[in-house]
Structure formats: C-alpha cells, structure tokens
Amino acid sequence: MAENFELLNALLQKLAIVVMGPDSINNLKVPEGYFISFCTPGIAVDQADFDFGFVAPGANQTSAAADFASVANTVPPPQGRWMASDNKLDDVYAMILRDSLFPTVQLSVQEKKSLQAARDLLIHDIQTIDPATGGVVTRPADTPLFEAYKEREAIYLNAAADYRSLQVNLLYSDDPKAKTEWALKGPIFEKRVRAAYNSWVPVKDQVEKALAIIDTIGARGPELYWSGLKQRFERSKFSTPEGDQYYLTKYFPGKFWDDAHKGGWLKFTFGYNEVHQINESSSMNVGGGGSVSVGLWSIGASASYAEQREFFKADIANTALQVSLTVVPIRRSWFDASILKSRGWKFDPNINQNVLSDGGTPPKGLLPAYATAMILARDLKLSTDMSSEQNEHVATQFSASGSVGWGPFSVRGNYSRNTDRRTHDFVKNAAGLEAPGMQIIGYMCEYVGKLPNPDNNLNWGQ
Image (cartoon, rainbow, N blue to C red):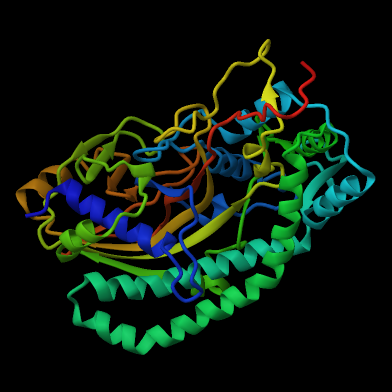
C-alpha cells in the first residue's frame, strides 16, 4: 500500500509532467534550469484578487495589485514546498541596481542604437494618472508586441499541457476512458498545439532577437544600460492608500478566469492506482528536487496562508481527484532578467558582500530562483473515504480551522493580506470533498546560477 508521501510525490510528478513536460509535437525539450515549486496547500484566490489595471490600477484596485505583487514576487525555495516569506524579488533587484560596480565599457554608436531599438521594441513610456496623487506620471509599459508575445505564450503553454494530459493518462491510468479520449481528442489537441505554437513563433522570434541583443550588450556592463534600468524600476513604483509601496506585476492572459478563456483550462485527473507507475518512471524537477514527506492533510488556525501549519496523515485507499488547471505567465515590466545572467557587474565590496546564489545543487543565497508563471486550479473534486477512522479524525478539526489543505490543494483558506475580506471553502459529501474556488497550487521557476559572477577579463579599473 502506498504511503502519503508516495502518493503526494506521484501527484506532483504528474502535475509537473502535464504543465512543464516536453513538447513532442514541436520537438521541444523542458527548458534547462526550470523547476516547479508547489504550494502545499494551495493559495486560495478570487477573480477580484487579479482584477486590476495593467498600466495604472484604479484607486480601488491598488490593494489587489499590491497583494498580487507580494505573492508573485516571493523568492521561491530551491527545494521543498513553496512558502510565503519576506524575501522578495523586487527587494533583491533594488539591491543589485543600488550596490553594483561596473567595468569601463565604451559602446559604439551602432551598439547604442541597437540597444535602444531592442529596448523600444519591448518597453515604451506612457503618460498615466497616479492613483495615489491624481497627477500625471510617466510609467514604463509593455509594447503591443511584447503583450502579444506573452498572450500567445500562455495560449501555447496551455494547449501543450492539454495534450500532455491526454498522453500521461494513456501511459499511467488503467481507466479505459483514457484510451478512448486519446483516440477521439488526441488528433484535435495536436492540431491546437501546432496552431498555438505557429501563432507564437513570429512574435517570439522578434522578441527573443531583441532580448538577445540586450543580453549581449548588457553583459558587458555599460553604465548607460544600467541607468535605463534604474529609471524604469523607479517609475514602476506604486503606493497603496495606506502608504505601502509595491512594483506593479502582471500576468497573461488578462481575465484568464472568464468564459472567453475557458478553453485555456484543462482537465486533470489522478488516481491511487497511478502512484507506483509514475514514481518508477518520472524524474521531473519538482520543488527543486525535494519531495514532501509529510501528511496530506494540513490545517491552520486562521484563514491566512502565511502561518504555521500542522500536517496529518490521510487514508488514501482508492483516492482519486479531478481538477481544472491553467498556466499563467507572470510579467514584470520593471525587471530585466538578463542582469541575472550578466557577468558585467559586481557588488561594491565596501557596501555589499551578499551572495545572491552560489550556483550549487541546490543553490543557496538570497535569490536562488524566481517565479516565471503561476499554476492555478479550480473545481476540485476529491474522492476519498471521509468516513474512515483516519480521515474522520482529521475532519473533526475542520470546523475550528480557518485553513485546510490536502496536498497541493486548498479546500478552505484565504489569499489576501486583508484576511477578513474573503475565504473559499469546501462542500463535504459521502464521496469526499469539493472545492470549486480558484487557487494557486505552484509556480514555474527558473534558477539564476551563480550570482554575482563578474568576468575578471573585463576592465574593472583596478
């Protein structure tokens, strides 16, 4: 009989294969340096938590925008489960921009033009109203080309995940419906993947050519380039009515939860009988390489996600689940990820001696990785015997608990820092539990490598 940690590991492995596995249709491998950091449990969210302006949130939207920025910019651990923390990407990025030294670099006229053209292809400045002051301010914003790039990326990622879901069900499930679905839907889903990828490629080529120019020239550390980054970062700062500062962070596609985007949600299933087949054949990078060896049930006293939790073993015999999933890329107009790979800067040793990442396995430091996309779930149906002694014992604590989770899923909880604002909850029945609300169950993340990692061959003037 499988243990709780075996079932959880198999579940996370299958989720990882579906949302981040290779694309056999377009012959694309899993990108190097990527992993999934799963929340255990998920973070309960509502559409209102995402419903804010992408250029300038309205006065009544700033709290939602600030809350989302806080969660999306939390630095993920390189191993184990994702946890709320005060270690934020924007704080580390601000430190890099503030405390760095650069080599002496002279750019040619053509290099300056190429760098500016690449920047203008992705980011442009706009005039908008500051919700805090009511005055006109200049903000950086994504160009229509870059927005199309991220929108089409999201469509492709979810089309590919939908196809992989059919594939893994065929491989690991003994449900006869899996073969029928593959025969009926496989060719249709394959066409969707090809169409989505072919639609993405034209803008992908333009955007990635511009990014390559920025990477190449920026890697040499010209101060001209960095002065533009500092200005962009400073212009991206917003304030809530309470005076809290945040950097506007977005996602694609906009309003991913509405009827217009329902095709971007895929059906995911998992059953107890798949545990050993998946664990014996899959080696996806889940949680940065660490598995969670705790009970499946988790309980917290309040509705807030950011708290200490107790974990309890679950009776998992004949357990099965069904849930809808979608992948939502994160976009930060204020953040240039190329400087995390650049060897054209280092910290001033008189000011800062921090190691952001030692490049180890797993890496250690203030910024071992950062989140590039969210994995969201909704309409969870968990089939499990709630009348068994083990599950019934845990269930007696539900009524006094503000937050309840099962593996990577939240069945009761809250997302916002305003923890009295809203919660989501479950319905218990003879077959198990149902939790229809949306939740973030994990993040697609990228390791940053050794950081800082200055090139000693550059002219540091020493």
